[in-house]
Length: 235
Image 1 (cartoon, rainbow, N blue to C red):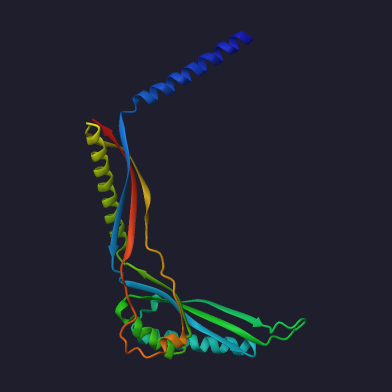
Image 2 (image 1 turned 90 degrees about the horizontal axis):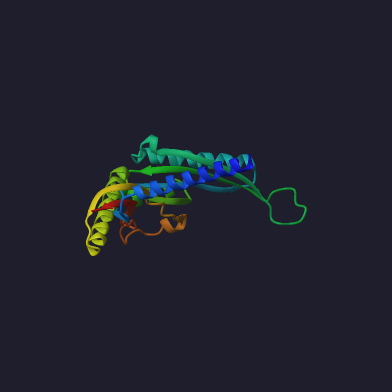
């Protein structure tokens, strides 16, 4: 029986080895390359967070003042033409603050933070909007992010450039070896990279300064990238 078992196992491994060799031998000669695509565009949308930070003697007073100032900010945003769907209250944060004395049970004051997320589609009005927000009671701006409303379109363009780059590389490599590039055998997308946020935090006094020097907004460009891995059959 043992001899029969050994014979069966040997046959099985031999069959497996033959199958693996057959699969390997069926793969045609290939040239494998990676392609990169990049698109630079000017942002046409800005997302940022604005809000109020207040300090009051009681919890209720801190909450009340924060709510009142936040309501004033929302009213100003709507009056300035920001659509209601592009205004969202993010969070309310309340915290008792102690002066650090050991065993103290009564807070020195209460800290309240209220934040509103804003999507601005008229980017050239950003400076004026910020100035108005601070006059309306805001004392903080965080997480400014420059974006494109045509992101998918630009990602598709970056992907096309990545494929073109891959084909160009494969053609050059094959030509150096006296071969030609045939049809693609395998394609894997390495992923697209959307632009991330540009973080900024501004204090109230910074935006209260004279703006006679002109606009402080420089949109610049955002970069959208894509990568692909392609294997072409060599002819």
